Length: 413
Image (cartoon, rainbow, N blue to C red):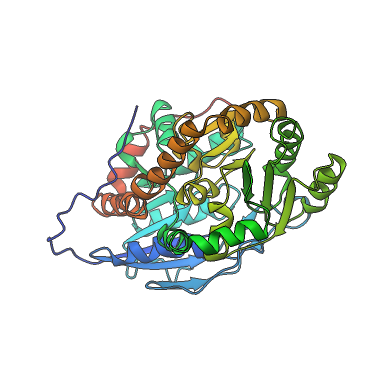
């Protein structure tokens, strides 16, 4: 399997020339700020983030790097999923930018003009994105792969996607992996805060009737794609084997009314609690530390590493392309489990087996924490981005374009 090195090739003591990096991103989300801040700290990197807006993801102030907002334009009516993100010539020009990083999203109709613009200006350019769609099709794949031929390199979030691109014929040296992750510092601080106060944690458990088990947890927005209803249906089965079992559902969203109605229909009022949205890790920590397993039936993303950071094994559906790239961190049987997609009976069976084996559960919890703290680290993610930047800067645009033409000629729909 292909594994692109994510370590920068320069020695730490080497004095590096400044590389002015323009990065276009859909938002300036809180969880991304540590990534940009760490990148801007790297020797010789001067970062400017050009960020858009998303009603579901609030933007936050920049810390340790420059940031400039833009207003994306959505097309009208049924085409509203397509956006135009203007690439400002005042920001991206050869006199003020050494490397450009663009969002690799083919729903952004401005991506192709932006790539043509940076190529015309002679600016080495990278695209950064998932590299696939959860609703993948031949046309989407063809468009995504075709536009990538105009850039110097590709940054993806997982080794699995990098392997897929390599098998498809892409030049392996142009592909860089920045495994998606979150900054664990606040999570670990919150975790330790409560572990250092066992009496307070026990009082919390008694207050919320979490002093008996087993205890399941879901934390995320309540959206239909997440299939939290599968967890509730599995709970109705598990209650027959574990009368005191509980599931805590933390979050809010469009699916909340339907989920509450389903819990009532299944007579789970004494076994399921809905807390609403909780955002701060210090407030979330006692819920995580009072649970045994984190269950996220479909569409999991960074929530997986959030749960791992608190030492919780994670159980997800086994249709992997419906999850985010972060699911690469899940190793079934080691730090979590999978179950047959959309099958509550299979979910209940997997959970029953796991919850009936305390030693196995304890080992998985240890492995989950190790995965978050030692493997999927912020440093490794930023190493991947930095390596791609230095690769692009070192290669003339004309030379790279010529080599990218050797990538697969994708003509079959």
